[in-house]
Length: 383
Image 1 (cartoon, rainbow, N blue to C red):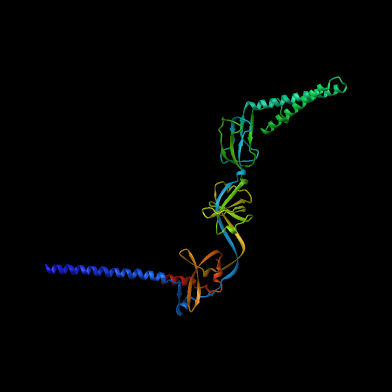
Image 2 (image 1 turned 120 degrees about the horizontal axis):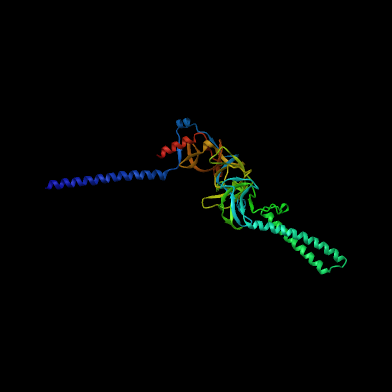
């Protein structure tokens, strides 16, 4: 009985000691990791052999004239001034529709035909008024002759003059109405009166929407077609905050679609909206140098803007290394010691990378050849 108690006590003590030992080892590991993070100085020191192997060379911050290529993306839209709602000048029934949605048309092309008896009445009124005006003209001339010899009173002459003037004004009004609905009053006679008028295209473009059906009665206020003039195509491009100062009105750009990236067309920026939206981007509006059927409303497009002749401070490309989406350079501290310094980069080409706010690097010796090897050594040291 006594032996069992001692054995159980010994076993319990051993478990407790083992647990404490494991806890100490765990605490030691955690402590060491925290200690490393705390004492991390982002410096690496090379041995003589490593110096020879890496072959470190240094450079200094440099001034360079660089070209920047800004890439933008956005959508093609149509300026509201180039979207037209077309209606019939006078009401009537749609006799025929000669286009379909999306079809292209030329200026003056007949889009639809409208029929109504009122068109006949308008032409009759014109011809009747024209005949009455001729009669009033003859009467006025006769009254003038009679008034000269005092064979008629001045009042009779004035009445003849008023009748002629009234009919003349009425005829001009009817003539203008006929012109608006597409009927040439000068060539109108009783033998060519027609009951139909045409709705014609006011410009060249394509049909966006058709609002009516054949046989439908329409009022003058009803929209028959929505037409788009491709000359009003605008390219609405997103410009991110880092590039906003480089995008100016009047700049020439190259644009292309996702479907056909090899076809690049010339365009020009016509305005820049001076406002950064929630997405961190402003909007630049560009216009094609000449209309092209490749670009249509709603299409996603890309653009390239070349910013030339900008003086900037930077370093050779091999001096700048990247790790975990951040950029760094190494300062030569002397005695084969090198310190990693975070930097913000701007534009770059095949040889040179811009360093933003680079004044703090002046008078420092920056590693050129061997920067990547130093990064790998520092990374291995951290691990």
